[in-house]
Amino acid sequence: MILSIRSYAKFVGLAAFALLLAGCGQEDTAQGGGEQQQPPATQVGFVTLKAQTVGLSGEMPGRTVAFRMADIRPQVDGIVKERSFTEGTLVEAGQQLYLINQDVYLAEVDAAEAELARQRASLDRAAKNRVRYEQLVKTQAASTQSYDDAVADEAEGKALVAAARASLDKARINLEYTSVVAPISGRIGSSRITEGALVTASQADALATITQLDPIYVDVTQAGGKLLQIRDAIATGRIKGFDDGEIDVRLTIDSTGGEYGHVGKLQFSEVTVNETTGTVRLRAVFPNPDGTLLPGMFVRASVDQGRVENAFLVPQRSVMRRPDGSAYVYAIADDNTIVSKDVTIEQSQKDAWVVSAGLEDGDRIAVDGVLMIGPGAPVTPVSMDDANAQQAAAQ
Image (cartoon, rainbow, N blue to C red):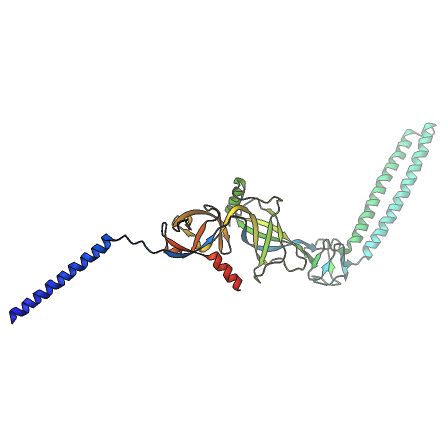
């Protein structure tokens, strides 16, 4: 009985070993006799690129600055008799704002006029004496010394008349200064004095301040290195400048997040770089007819920085980077395999990169599924252009 059990176990082991050998032989036959299997193609979404001229712009932080600002100060001493404006309203250049008591200055004008009249009378008398002595000298009825004195008196009279006239002009100017007028047009702030207050020509405190808001300046800052890169790119022709020389600037107001309705123009950029921040200040001027922008507001400015011809807008999610920072994309070849292409990126625009080199018109760029493929991998391309068009039509 024991022998039979051992024989049965031996028989079962030999049978299992035979089956194993048979299975291995069939597997080897299947692998060696048939063709080698290719990895399955990965379905990827792609977009077809079209060359176009793309405008470049840079977004920079900025702050609004008044176009003009004038502090109103008195130029003569006196008591404020009248205030002729409403605080916070618009005033025009030349409009009277304050009136200082004029009594003293009217009297000074009268005195200066009287002095001028007296000096003119003296001059008239000196001129007649000089003519008289001139006739007497010819007949030797008067000495030459007397004639010389008459000539000197006339010259002195002319000088005194000129001095009196200047004094009269000064008195009239001081009288005009009693009417304090607006030097510029704009919105006037609060009055810092009231009627009855004493003001002096040498005081440091302003009576009020006028701010011109239309147009208005916007000062923005840009990294000095970036500005040099743009200038070098324009100089080498990689980026085209503007034919008319005018650079447009657009604003987004930080407090509301909305876009400002008017386009500004870049006026100038500083010629020096801030030693602390390494930035350059740019100044733009904007129309502000509704007074929407007020001095001191924080804004974000989008400054046009040229244009790139034959450029491509490539979806950002299709661009990958190597450890050294260089950028590349996966393009789909005619045989539906993946080819890696190095690209040169200028800047981002919304959800796309502006690529100036490395691509050709009509290239199919893999967008979806790029993490599952590599160079040489077979793919099943699905156009995302058609899908986007169908989605837009459905909406």
